[in-house]
Every structure is written in C-alpha cells, then in structure tokens.
Image (cartoon, rainbow, N blue to C red; front, side, top):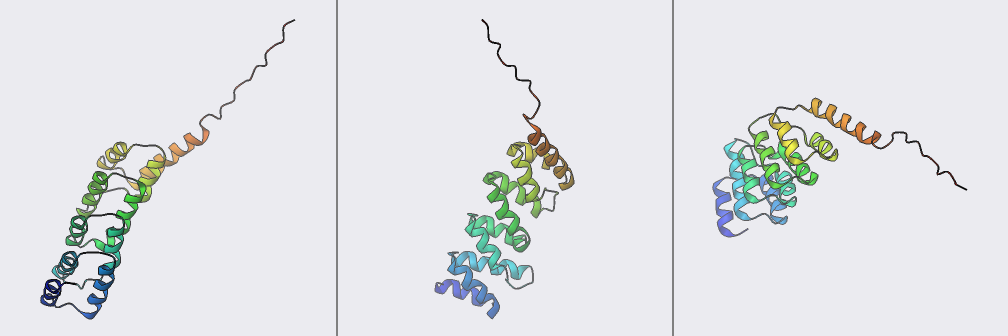
Length: 170
C-alpha cells in the first residue's frame, strides 16, 4: 500500500484481523482507495471489516469499484456477493444485474438467482424476467412457471405423426 493509504488506515484504527483481510484484498488487485473505503464503510456500520472474500469475488466477477462500494455502504457485501456473482454468471446484462442488486439492497422482493436462472433457461427473455420481478413474482410462482415451461419443452415435438408410405404405381 502507498503511504497515503496506510495513513488513512491508521486513522481508522484497523485491527490486526482487518489488516489480514486487507492483505488478501490487495493481493487480488483492489486499489488502496477502495480498501480504505471498504474498511471505512464497515466501521460506519459499527463492525470490523471481515468481507475481503466477498469483495474479492465481486472484483473477480467484473464488478466495478463503485458497484462494490455501493454494496459495502449498504452493509450487504457478505449477503449479496454470492447472488451478485451468480447473476453475472447467468449472463444477465449489467443493467439488469444492477437493477436486481438495487432492489435487494432496498429490501424489495426479488427472485432468487436460482429461479432467475431457471426462467432464463426456459427461454424467457431478460425483459420478461424483469417484468415478472417488478410485478411481484415469488420464487414459488417462478418455480411453478419454470416447471410448466420445462414440461412443455420436454413434450414439444413428441406428438404422434402417422407416416404414410408412398404407394408404388405400376
């Protein structure tokens, strides 16, 4: 860390455990400024910074520093990081991932990433999934819809078709 980052951390009175968290975070390529801001956010919520693994996974999944800091400022790093990474892995656009994370940070109802993935696998578009979320679809309702769509796909094209042989004319 640069000396300015170290000075900022000294002002925050970081513990040895927090320093160990920061070493791992720094080794993964997170900037000094982001490290200081993550510790500061944790301290504002009156707890030590223990979320290096969550911040590293978000960083590795391609989330920006601003997105990671927004999650940290809402004290949701540990609770949202796994879901956020999963949403990215599902292949949702950045705008949709951001929308879903904002809903979760505000405590608004949102489908789990597992159900979103199932719906996406049944060929629902991102727009259709977002519309269902905004209309208040629950995980149970999403499960039922995904099961019905999967069943329909499984039976698609399996209807009996009578094959007629061509008659031979003489």
